[in-house]
Amino acid sequence: MTAFSLSPEAAAPRLHVAGRTLERLRSVPGLAARYPGHLDATSLDRLAELPPLAKDDLNTALAHLEPTAGQSATWLFQSGGSTGAPKVGYAPTGFYMAGVHAHWQPLDRTDVFVNAWGAGRMWGAHFLAAALADLSGCRIIALGSVAREEYGDWLAFLGARGVTAIGGTPSVLRLWFAHARAAGVRLPTLRKVLWLGEAWQPQLDEDLAVVAPRARRWGMFGSTETWVVGTNTPDCPAEVFHPLPHQLVHTDPDGLLDFTTLDPEMLNPVLRYRTGDAGELTACPCGRPEPAMRVLGRRDSVVQVRGLGLDVDELIARAEREPGVARAQVVLTEQGGRASALEVLLLPAGPDATPDAERVRTELLTATITLGTAFQHDPESFRVRPVEELVGNGRTGKTAALVVREES
Ligand SMILES: [Zn+2]
Image 1 (cartoon, protein in one colour):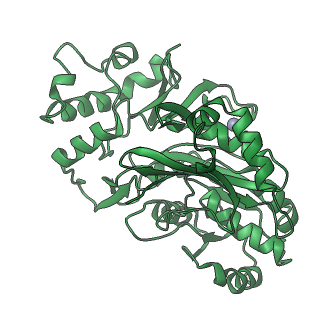
Image 2 (cartoon, protein in one colour; image 1 turned 30 degrees about the horizontal axis):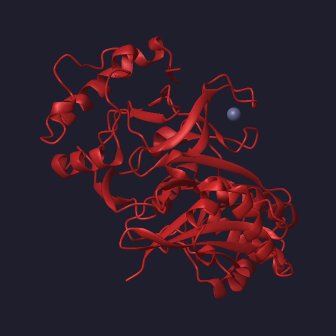
């Protein structure tokens, strides 16, 4: 079923922004043909008739449009890189965070906030979190990424400063709290954990219960193209977000979410833009009356392995259900475009946990028909092994479910 996060009445006064974005997209040589003259964005029904915009389309548009912000700076950011080729996107001074802060205030003046999103390499998360914290008037510790061997010293410093809030990518937060837990570090003053960039990881709840029992999660959902689309509070499920009023969320019958920005300051032409996330509009159990969306993860989790579709997320979920496994990751090695080997890496649940790799391997091969068929003649090319760390993206700190490697 097709549905929008705003009612026709609530959307109407802002739809001229979508109309302007449509005109901008029409001016792009590679895209103009997709938006013939009879299409417009004068109502939600009309908007739903516009074709959705994929990442590559937006890339084409941005290469042509080269936007400049009116009275402010124009920041260039890179998106992709975790799962695709890097693309450039734009944001003005403040990264639209004034609009976010007007509706969502996880931080207040009394907070001491650690910004642990990596800064630099043209990634936006550190800067938008900084802008939010700045608007909150709290004390800010701009930490960024730190190396594995530095966690101990930094945790001691943060403990001494009485930090009350920390923010980062769930993969990075996991490293912080797993390290603190293993080292016996406690952060009793920590009350808030802000996150953005990936789905929340349930293992974080377990580590937080030990390291910082008063801490609760505050999530943001968005992308470098859309910027922050929605937020949630500790009373919302981790996968449910409340869209901001200037972000229009739409679900198609195929279950994919698309986003249209109704903020007149928006520099990226975001019009029915698909991030690849599946989801649905829902009512949130937190009781807030605003609409909410449930994000069900990426639909592009199916990869072709020897002509068969393998659902990476399903494989990982199976592996993570095995005893002693905290997280799993799939590494696909290709040779001339063909899958030569597939590995499942297992991150043990703790220093004493030893996942039984052979048992997991047998379980995965038996339960996943695609795997058994694809590696029927060379089962030794499907391997499972425990590792000390998963393959991460050095720029964003994210850990992709699937890593593809080309063998020369
Ligand atoms: Zn809620």
